[in-house]
Length: 226
Image 1 (cartoon, rainbow, N blue to C red):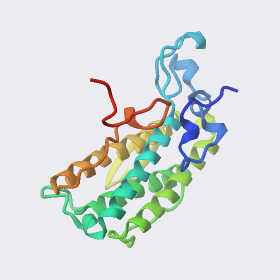
Image 2 (image 1 turned 90 degrees about the vertical axis):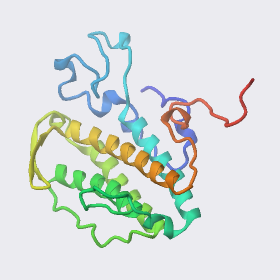
Image 3 (image 1 turned 180 degrees about the vertical axis):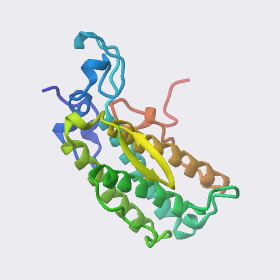
Image 4 (image 1 turned 120 degrees about the vertical axis):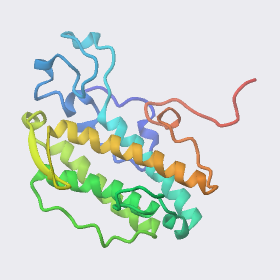
């Protein structure tokens, strides 16, 4: 078994699970060989040793958990008022405030897991929107369930199309695609949160993947050379 990439062990709030550290174990079992691609669609050849690039889902989960910890610190420092900041006009009515947008991030994660497990969908409408601790505790719960699903989902089912009703529309997608969507969906919405807060004068940190501890490396703001 390969060791996890340098840097993963330095993220104290990420639960390390050796069974999901590598893309090849996560998703490759079902049809990657047939499709001649890496487990998450990365570049691959018939010879695994010559693969150019593989992207691990676990790396993206670690990254978003690092992001969550950073955002929780910012929001707790600012207080509950910041969660009441409007997301602006022309939305679809589902999330009118930053608090509602963050609830949406975590709700989507939880409910997609429930869909893939064939469970009844959790009604999150009653979740408080102006309490950072409560919101992020819900996010910890949804992330635990996502990681558990990735570990236990039948390998042969990752590329089997499933059909769902989503917002009165029909969705057909594979579990592989849905799980990738969950992570990308979160990253996109955190960027929206950052923009909304910046417009309110709340300056944030650099939260790009490059500046995270995932996959190792180091970033020291203001300590570079001339």
